[in-house]
Image (tube, rainbow, N blue to C red):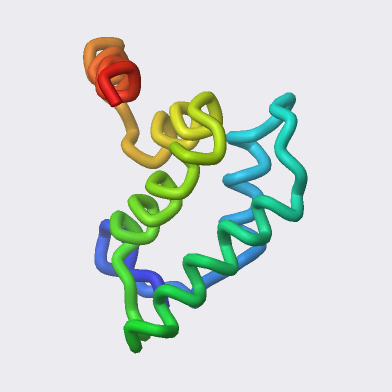
Length: 101
């Protein structure tokens, strides 16, 4: 189960996560197999730790942790939706943190 920001609970939807990843990786040279592997690794991590409910924010962080190594442009695209940047300054700060890695 995924606990949304407003407290609602939803069943984990692999296809919903894939749609978000496909949006973030549009026009990037990333095979769908790599995205499936990314989702598999998240599911495996959750299963291995015995977690049956995860907050949406934590799930998003798990995705970002893997995306930053896969493709930094996709990372920024996903982060811009997931983190819901309020202004350009927040967006620039995220970019600066990537550059400083």
